[in-house]
Image 1 (cartoon, helix red, strand yellow):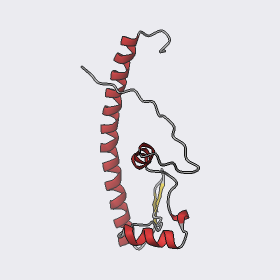
Image 2: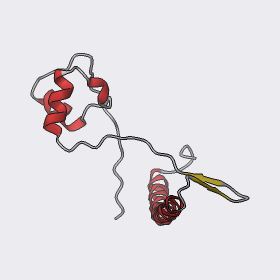
Image 3: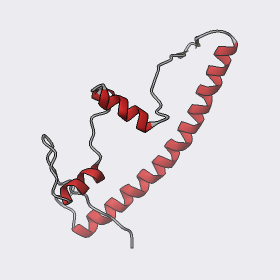
Image 4: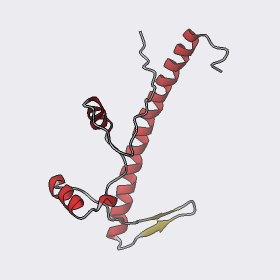
Length: 125
């Protein structure tokens, strides 16, 4: 499509797409809120019935539980992770802003290279 469009036409189309995505995002947010409320209500209902599943002719809802971490004290958690060499507890992502600061100060991190991400900033006028 972009091969036959003028730069001005591309900008117009990008603005149209951005607006449509905003509309869809707002609709998705509303639907997610509704779905979250229904899920919460089903969980309450199932727990009141001392059950973990419910179904009808169209589907089944099953309560599942997963243990996930919530860090209350990052200093204590960081100290533990470092002292016990438990880096596997962390996700493998380097903070971009901190990385850029290190690069700007001349520091390098072995095994990590800088890649330039190119974005297009679009503004309606």
